[in-house]
Length: 616
Image (cartoon, rainbow, N blue to C red):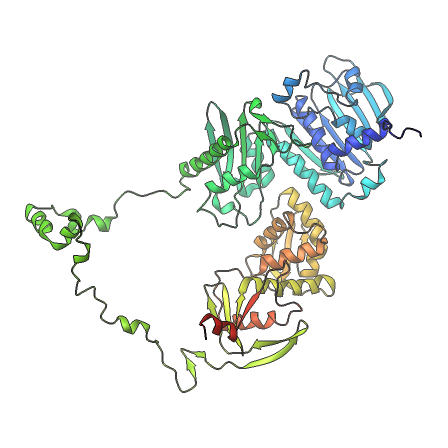
């Protein structure tokens, strides 16, 4: 029998290794930008075509490479950052795995131009299928320009798994923002298909945050700064009004490396407890600086997840720093120990406590009940405090009148049967409904009553309305009296451009003005006037962080986000007409009993169940 175990060919092994590092165009962007930063660049330009599928090019003015280094850089495990095993635990640079260029060269056509300050000519290197096909001197400015073309050209199966251009572009922008946030002293720019998306001048951290997140953050940032022997933490947190219903602008950097940490996110959320709604998330950009030996950044291929030697200490520092910042800027609630002016004028405060007053107080029975043991049950009842009419408290405030109503609520509801959702339902057609805790609607039925959740019920109603609009007929548009400009971050503008065709079906009319800025010309009929801009911003935010089944189509995600966003929230008072309209609309739905996510919209309590509760 022949042997069946053999070594993989180099080109296949390289492609397998590349799969760990280069999962999509954004992965290559991250690696190339980090290399530019490590080269000491003060200016970094990123150019992409076709969302990185056709071209990704990074140009920097760093220190460049020699001819030998330029070719060696494409070898596997080639790095200038590590010489000994101990170096792995004191990494301060960004890229160090020695896999980036080798992985890129395995799945793309690469061209490298680089030149050092001391060299007269630069070097041009072209690589394809992990092999150098061209190497020659060239005229080049100081620094490095590296281009990767036709990503996954030799692995068509991998290319087929890439998302739409808009989706891949969003991932590229995420990686670009994370590197640019970490190094505000470096100029960064991003061009997509010849159009400049970001132009970030060098500055301080606050300027960079405002450049990326938008001018609206300029007056809403609170400075965080705590320095200790163990670690330093700096950066900015957003004031409570910047909190969002989804995880939006949240950035953690450890030694200038972006990380994801649910543990540290919880520390910040805990610091905001009591200042924002429980279902909201604060905004922050925080930088942690500590000894590299206290962390391990080798626990994840993308190095976005790290391990701290002592997580509890880091957690406590982060939480304390955020709380201190909030208190320092008078945002956190504080205790007021000063007396109210009205209290200052009371006799007990303004007049002296004379000897006669003291003797009278000591001899009183009330004083004895506090100063002597076993006296509490001797407290004398006061005539003023006696509830003589306590029984009247339980009497009905209104008697049943001749029309058969109690307090305006019908005691004999009229019911009709309707066929909906594949079964017969008793739909209440009573004249009045009862709202409970500004959250639930109680409607009596022939055999009991329904407890309807107003927000979930409205979410089901809107979901079916919007689904019909995007799949069959266009919803009506309510024209805006004046165009409403949208001040969006660059990444949000890209997403909005992708959503425009489907938003138009739902009833939105959004166009670009002469300055290529989005303006709202019309909205769906049910959008509250004056809330149009906020509705779009929240819709984009929810869509970005849609956390349900990723197999949903773009239209389905949009419809679900719209339904959730526009539904009547808990805490909103509804009158009789609104409650009646909502319940009737709910039972006209194809699936009235659950929301799109499977939550119940109402619970039915039948008479026999109620009788069992009272043991009847």
